Amino acid sequence: MGFARFCLFLMFVSSMVFMASCSKTDGKKESLGRGLKDAYKGDFLIGAALGRPYILGQDSVADMLIKKHFNTISPENDMKCELIHPEWNKYYFDIADKFVELGKENNQFLLGHTLVWHSQLAPFVTKITSADSLRLFMKEHISTIVGRYKGKINAWDVVNEALNEDGTMRKSIFYNLLGDQYIIDAFRLAQTADPKAELYYNDYNIEQPAKRKGAIELIKKIQAAGIRIDGVGIQGHWSIRGLPLEDIEQSILDYSALGLKVMLTELDITVLPNPWDLRGADVNQNFEGSAMMNPYPQGLPDSMQVKLAMEYESLFDLLVKHKDKVSRVTFWGVNDESSWLNGWPIRGRTNYPLLFDRNYQPKPAYYRVMSVKDEEKRP
Ligand code: G3I
Image (tube, rainbow, N blue to C red; front, side, top):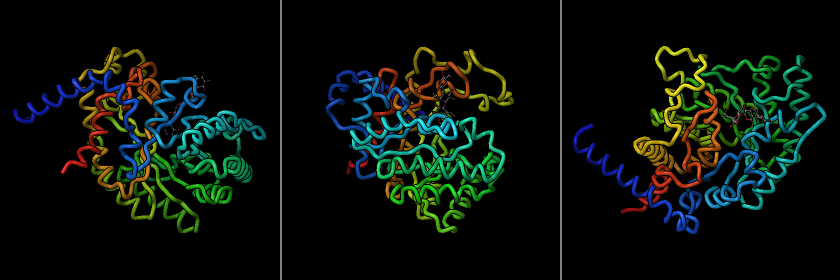
């Protein structure tokens, strides 16, 4: 880094530390001022995935933050098969009903996550061995759930994570018994159950060229069958080691060219090393308790706060550049403490992947994301 850039970086660090230290006083203005959803109004929706405590309103501070910053919400786990449809003839809608109630109260765009996914399936589904039984499950599961929330849930992640990293079809129970026809069937069933709900394909790493190619082929198959697909969700589980901005931009262009809305549906940026980052590491090695893999148990150093802020800023600069193609950005959690990344891929770590800290205070990354819109306005 040249001397001039280093000076600039130091100035940036000190300004970040100052702004973060002001967050207390700003906090008061912040609670009366505009939130993320206001700053990006007219560009794209801004949302968060809600765990059960937030859906049930068990945290009043989080409740205020959710109301203030997000105009769309997604259920992190409570509409997944294992929880909403635990036995063949048994559905559990209490939490999903509360989710819909909360979203309506806050006038938020509601996501249904997710109808067909190989993970978090109820045990009875994993035991299905015949194509006819699996077709019957899909028909009942999708028709019952989408039908119940017809006109209330605005959009569905109809199929989640159907692809391998090389773009081929994941050998899930759905593919093994029904071939790739299951994807078309899932979208057709959802469209029938609620003709007005938006229907999405959702996956991680589909900004990567090979997987993006597979996703495009999958989307074209749905469209060729005359079935509606309205959008594609790039999950956006990225790392502070560097966001694939060129791949993200190319993906926004390529998916949009298919006539689809493009969304970031599960955005977070891990600040911790992972086994696969370690050259030659055995990714199956159990790193639980390893200080090397959990370097910031007492707090994130300013230098890492600044790096995280810069990664988020570069991402939102790109999203604003393509605001005509991007319809939604959903963070996968409300604050650092609620992030799934504190427990994955290694349990018991302290991660800092989101815009709000463990006290629900805005982090430097929040201010950089907000400043993208201020800078956009500067002549
Ligand atoms: O509900 C049980 C609880 O009763 C039990 O005491 C506890 C003990 O571990 O487990 C609880 O279930 C956990 C569940 O989250 C609800 O909290 C599961 O163990 C845990 O594995 C599950 O993790 C979720 C993960 O999906 C499962 O694959 C994460 O919270 C959730 O953020 C994550 O979200 C997925 C998206 O849906 C799809 N895209 C990838 C993303 C990350 O995996």
